Image 1 (cartoon, rainbow, N blue to C red):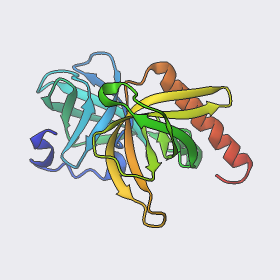
Image 2: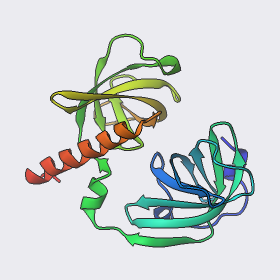
Image 3: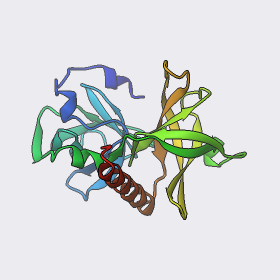
Image 4: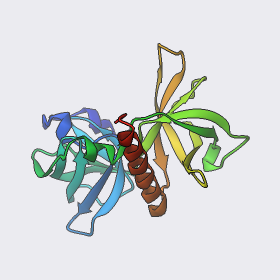
Amino acid sequence: MFKSLFGGKSAAQPPSKLPQLNAFVDVSVGGRAMRSVTVEAVSAKAIVTREMLGSVGESAVLVYTTPSGRYRAATKIAAVSASSTQFDAPKKVSLIGAAVGAQKRQSVRLDALVNGQWRFAPGGLGSGEFGRCTIRDISRGGCSLILDRPLKLHTTVEVRIQLRSDAALTVLGEVMRHETIKASGKHSHGLRFQGMRPEEDQAIIEFINRRQAELRSRGLA
C-alpha cells in the first residue's frame, strides 16, 4: 500500500461522503473519458483504486454512489503503481443525487445469506474440488465468504454463486479481511472480486435485484 495513504493532512470528509471499499467508482483523469474501477482502500487522507489511471499530479474527477447519495469529488493523483492509483482525499465533495431509500441500497448489495461453493485459485486458476460455503453481502465489487476454516489475507479463491436454477457464476476473489463470528465460530472473509467482465457485473446486479424483490414479496426485506 502507498505510504502516503496514512500521512499528510486530512480532508476531514465524513465517511458517508467517501467511496466505499470494494465499490465501483467512475473516474475521469485530465478530462479523458470516464473509466469504472474498484476501490481498494479509503481513508480520510487518500483513496486508492485499481489500475494505473494517469500520472502523478493530474487532476481527476470521481463519481460514485454511497447509501447517503451520489457524489462527485475533484482531486489529484498522488501516486501510481502498475496496478493501482492513489488519489488525494478530496477537499470538496458535491452531492449530485439524493439517496432513494432502502430500495436503492438493496439494488446494489444483497445482505441475505446465499449458499455457494468455493475453492482455492492460486495464480488465478481454480484448483481442486469445490467445497460448500455461505455467501452474504454480495455486491458488484465483492462479497463475504463464510467458512468453517480461516483463510490467509490476500489468498485468491474461486467462488461459485447460483444465479438461477440453470445458471451459475464463478468469479475470482482476493481475501482482504477476516474475522471470527463469535456466535458460530465460523470465519467470515471479505472478498474483493477480480477481473470482472461487464456481462458478469450485469449478471450480479440482476441477481441482487431479483433476490431483493423475492425477499420483499415475502416481507423479509
